[in-house]
Amino acid sequence: MASVAAWLPFARASAIGWVPISQNPLPVPRLRDDAKRGDDKLRINVSGRRFETWRTTLDKYPDTLLGSNEKEFFYDDESKEYFFDRDPDLFRNVLNYYRTGRLHYPKHECISAYDEELAFYGIMPDIIGDCCYEDYKDRKRENAERLMDDKASENAEMDPAISFREKMWRAFENPHIGTTALVFYYVTGFFIAVSVIANIVDTIKCGKIPGMKKEPTCGERYLEAFFCLDTACVMIFTAEYLLRLYAAPDRCKFMRSVMSIIDVVAIMPYYIGLVITDNDDVSGAFVTLRVFRVFRIFKFSRHSQGLRILGYTLKSCASELGFLVFSLAMAIIIFATVMYYAERNVPDTDFTSIPSAFWYTIVTMTTLG
Image (cartoon, rainbow, N blue to C red; front, side, top):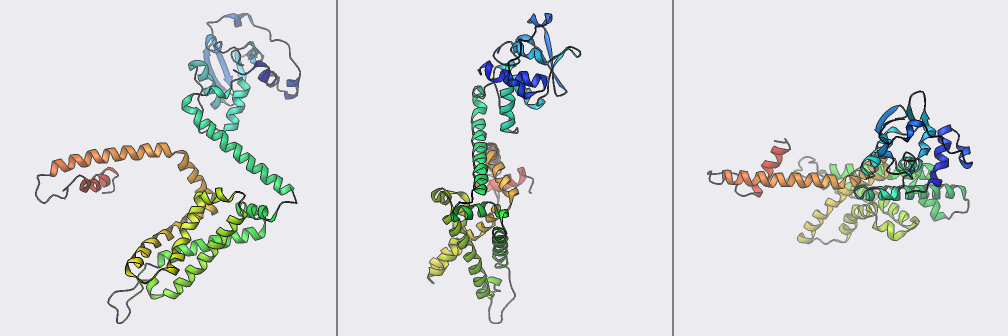
């Protein structure tokens, strides 16, 4: 439990609405006559939202603000209640700690605001329950890393002696700091869009050619044009990757990052196609490898804050999504098994095995069929 001396001056200062006085000790609060009873019900007003609890509930933790006599500084004689000008949503978690003895961390709340509320009420975050502690530590680490990055960026902006590599990395990470970085940002975004569109148009039928039985695709009919367009896009992507690799503060960490792997996978089919032979087996494998060109669309995540937020959201909800997929898989297996044994003796049935009943079960459960 936190030492009373650590939070008491700030609580007293907040009680009278003046923070500087927190550096000077205040007199011991005067106890009311009815404050000595241990079985009475207390009313707590937190920014207009009222909570009620027993005094004995708060007395469980006398080293905290609500469990000590210091809460009398916040007592309003007219309304007969304790008033705190704090966050009422976070206070619910604080009050539940007194009731249950377990402190929980709400994932949707700001980690800094949560820490401030705990510090005000004199509660140490180290006592957070096991069910929430890992989430709390992860959020603390992410927040600390973000603050360090912001501080490093601010120091870099104020320091005129930064190296060319550092300037280049700042330009890649924050293209709005200069005209050159912004132009490169939009040029790479344009070529990403062109590459994705060309990959789609490549598969469209472009009309019959006299003397050919099979109608060729646009990629087959205008092979040189699509090759030149793909070459230009890949050259831009390669230059961007090499420049990012050169400017990265930690090159090993950069090469292991997800976006770096996507960059490599997006340009790899082109360079393999330059050295591949005309052997049918090898050419067939290369056609399969060209599927990886679709990964170029993920390069848009560097140019869209919304896509990055979506990625962070999916990452934070990975366990919940995994449980959802697991539950759906269980239901599919169960109902596919039922369908198979129900139809196994029917002539000309489509459910010749349990896996063959999977698709029917999937489209039925997801209302696709």
